[in-house]
Image 1 (tube, rainbow, N blue to C red):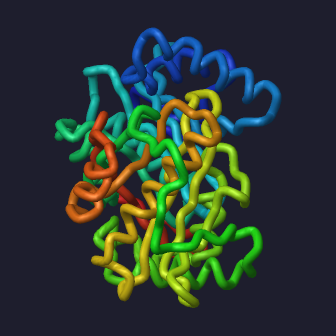
Image 2 (cartoon, rainbow, N blue to C red; image 1 turned 180 degrees about the horizontal axis):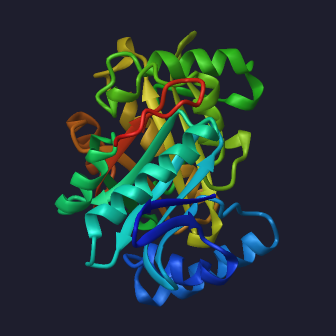
Length: 316
């Protein structure tokens, strides 16, 4: 997979001897105290064939590394990518080449959505991504609630939480689809993927256990869902997704779901509960703040949607 992009550099899949240097370049925003350990884990996983680094590409000028980019396929026809990082010389040209080649590889792998998270002040990186067909989907708020704010006893709730493992897959899928109707949380994604692929992507988050996925019911009606996962390495649980069907919104049920998630995280002995939410979803943000969550990071989410069937429409 070597393609000449212009007379003075090549884009190719990172050979094993260059993987550490390429990852050091791509992951330069990871704090110094964590980056080396993180790269060690990635390389060990790749060596054990638990992680595919085929999407780690480099731009090379002779024997010198000019730039690098990393994209990886995830369940549910989604790909995540770390944006290109290049040396100052020919920066835009190398970035465009890396993004273009990675887009081709992702499309050929059956990706339907590629997503990348950038600093909100990363104007140059955003412009590079937009040139290659990405669009600004949302600014995401990363919120955390420490165990100090978890309820000490199971909270009273107008909702009943039924383990999704006890329900038919089609029922859970139907509830999830209905929660997307008129949602304020990343509405650009509605209808892009089959709900089965969406659920496959959710299952790939953290340590999946169907007993941590719930259908929220009010009376005899399914009104929402609460999907949780464990992240033991970080001593935390995550709200992977929580949503309500349109008719159930505005009744305080969202706060009841957040409190239920906090209670379960306490029962599991975890130190914190985390989530990501669209900053434009003001009702949800305010609800989580009432539940004791605070913002610890903010990222710009860019996406590129590929036509089904794997054909990439590449920028020139």
